[in-house]
Image (tube, each protein chain N blue to C red):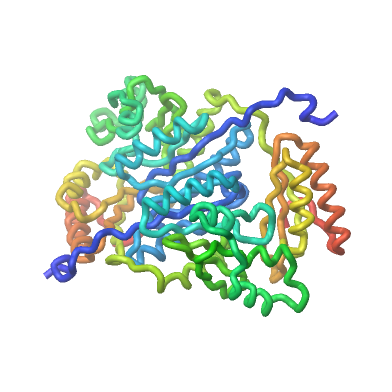
Length: 257
Length: 257
């Protein structure tokens, strides 16, 4: 009996990431959040299906939010929730949901505890503004919280803060079966195995097979990645592939090179 | 006389990047192309305004291509142009443009020279397929070319190949004034300077001012980035900001920390 026979089939639970910030689109800052969010969500049974990187422009943020929250089960945003003039994400989320942006009493209480008495300035109070009806996402690192409204989770852009906040969203996410992967590597070019791989993919319609070439120590190789929700099927596919590679005269390696 | 008085105003020339590949969305592979493309285009006077990361799903790729090529001056795609079953970008671009996908004679000639006689297999010939009417984008690294059709440039996902191909597209890009940037750093939290920064931004409407907090050696700091097409205006804004920071009792640093 395979894992898929044991489990009730679960529809794929999907997510979209909206990365907000001119600094990413200008090339100043390398995004370090997408891969972490993708892997974390995979473990929770949620597939990141789409990501967008958009500038600090209100109309763009509002329309992107509305398009994506209708199209995916969950939407995560990163960036634009600090105290400065270019931090407009909270304003845009409120506009997208058609609700006022209000100071959240709990957020004010958190910031009042964090800053010395009298130093919760107007600029810092900006970080307590949440679209009406939204709940806080705690920030164990630097206190200023993110928030959640509907299926949208609004997180910081700074990776250490984003990671801590993402962890705090866990209880609000209902995922399906976790996505798992199984990698086989061979030191052959991917074109050597392309025909056999297509034939394998045609038989393993419940497994996603990806082929990723690389160079290592001057040698050309290919990582062949099986992804899906049923570990037994990934193992069966990997075994077939390993036999194919041996027939081609190359010894497969389990895992990444 | 400032640079802006010397030059005829040029409308912003815009670009969109479409990153195609399940391996990015699964978190297996960290994208290393967006920042490089953004910085290269900045130098050519083209602003990357938008990026999307999408899976290897035909309908998604086709609709994203058609939406983005209508909305931006240039569209670049990365990924999905290799010889395996999961390389469907060329097929999707042809569908998006409503033209057949055909073997490009020059591409076949390039591959025939590259591979030993008799080794240009069916799988490898896939890499010579180009939407009818498209021109090749040379690949100095591993020969299999990218292509260009209309305002869409289709490049490889492997960073070394993508970079070489991007370089080859230069002659086909008509940019505006190059985007330049000027950074001032201070070891203060961004909330300390938020009010003054907003006032500065209100007066420098032709300059984009970004505020990016960081921690370095256990100290909190903020990089303040001025971006625009007129170096004299960036310098003037930076000078004003440096005076503001000195008034706050902190010595500004030119450039990144």
